Amino acid sequence: MYVGINHSSVGASEKKTVGTTRTQRLIRLLQMLQSGRKYDAGALADDLRISRRTLFRDLNMLSAAGVPYGYDKKSQRYSIAPDYFLAPINLTVEEAYGLMLSLRKLTVERVHPAYAQATEAAMKIEASLPARVRQRCAAVVDRIAVRPAPMCDVEAIRSEIDTIQRAMEQQHKLVVRYDAYTQNGDADRIIHPYSVAFIHNGWYLVGYCEKRRAVDLFKIDRIERLVIQPVRFAPQRHFDLDEYLGNAWRIARGNQRYHVKIRFAPEVADGVDEVIWHKTQRTQSLADGGLLFEADVDGLGEIASWVLGYGELAEVQAPDELRAMVRERAARTAALYAQPAG
Image 1 (cartoon, rainbow, N blue to C red):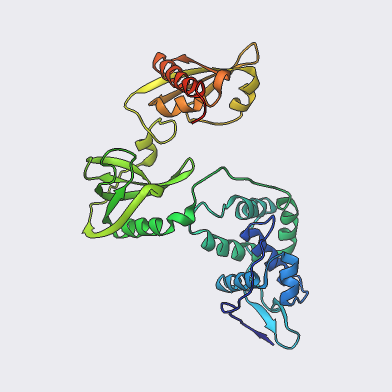
Image 2: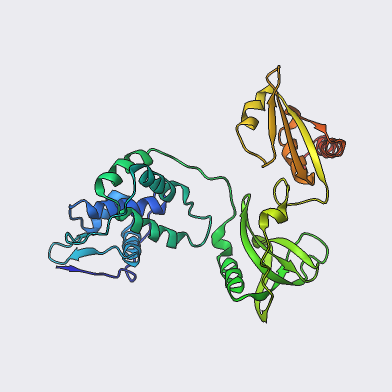
């Protein structure tokens, strides 16, 4: 007899899961329950290299996702009921592979607080694939590793993102106290929230600031206070984030557009050429093995920092303003390191 079980009250010491994300572990758990073999809690926890407490939490997540695993009291074993089938999804093997690759490897756990819901959706979709397709694709996907770039800690700003999303849905204004690293930077502002955007390595609130009478970006990590007002704002129907950012190198759009030319030494030429750094970039290989990099950017501060990261292996050829900016920053850096530490 199969019965549903809630394990929320079970307690035990935690063991760290090694080498897998939670998504991968839940998918592995689902595969074990679908295998036809009946596992007890100890066997499941040992095979997954997790504690019993973590196992029961994962089983509860399977249940929340609508996966009807069963527990046989007599044998004290877990499995999925043999008479349960999900309706198949009509996908090609290539489509299934792309889907599984995205769900298992490209859905990064800490990119957005809705990761848990995405995991539940992933389990439902993958469980509905025919077994032969799932096994064929899994054999390839499991051999692919993805190491995401550094990013902010989304768990630390979960409540702020939830509050902003509620305000956007209700079209209510926000009171924001923001640490802008400037004098009077912590004053309260009234913001009309237009969008939440993940840019470069962090989350930003994008909205109209009544104080500045302009659209602005606010890094959510630096918001010190956030309150929804009972006052609605007129929605901005035509706001486009790409149009707002223009040709900014990252997020800081300047008031003037510059045509930038940078010469990279042969030691880094291939590495620079392999990456799409900017939507306007153009590159040209040079006779000595170097690389000429060109782009049209709004503002110079951010690209100056990028150039400085390559040290003596990058030389700005144009414009003169960027060349002077890099030279001045390099001189200040050299002066700093000419002194004893501290």
